Amino acid sequence: MAAWQERLADLGYRAGWAAVRHAPESWARRGFDVVGSLAARGGGPEQLRKNLSRVIGTTPEQVPDALVEQSLQSYARYWREAFRLPSTDPAEIVAATLMSDEDRALVDELATGGRGLIFALPHSGNWDTCGVWLVAHHGQFSTVAERLKPESLFNQFVAYRESLGFEVFPLTGGEQPPFEILAQRLRAGGIVCLMGDRDLSDHGVPVTFFGETTRIPAGPAKLAVSTGATLVAVHHSYPDAHTSKMVLTPIEVDEVAATTQRLADAFAAGIATAPADWHMLQPLWEADWSAARRERLA
Image (cartoon, rainbow, N blue to C red; front, side, top):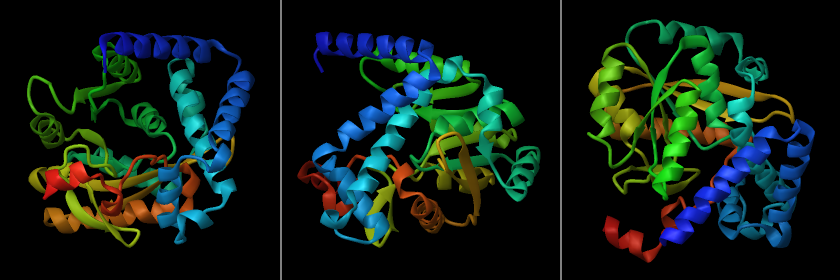
């Protein structure tokens, strides 16, 4: 990306952040719903349609247009909430987040047990909302952020999440690799949250996901194996226009490959309950990889 393009992207995000944050909620909601609907015109993004076809067990051509539109509106809702989150009362977010009594008791037990706790999440619903809920109930947790360009935009995203009470380490380019820092936090009884359904490093673990081969990050399983921390899959979704829902699935931990497959199975089970809320617009499965990626992994 050229310097002027990076500067333009930075200015665009800053302007969007300011405008959406201060707009009336009803205006922002309607505006982002319209954006989602417009994005779905003409069938929507081809890759999104391919990804949804795996989830619902059909061909891309048979994916209902209504599901594509719902998916893009859900994705637009994520960005609306993300832009407005710094000016939203955390108590409102917590109050609108649904969780079963059993899952709430499980989090309380695990977060205070001193063993360390790893939350692994797919890109479903609004993962930042899960973080706000966690901070409100159990204080700061640690996470990793993909480094974005321009650097000023990455710094803006990190500052935004740190303002919410997250401790954020860059995936690459930091003073030291994040794995050891996260392991230290877990050995001290802390909490770590990681996105776990998209392999950004090309070092992921091969898994079967909705019946096809892909790779997902090894980090959650490796951290659990090396530190003895408890590993839990967390699925977040939007049951309606005003609430969100968190569902927890404890994952058995033994060796990395088998643990990662169990995590993939838990992700799939959650995503299948709310396909429209899984925000995966990139090629994920091996069958959709580019020739360049196939060469790198050969």
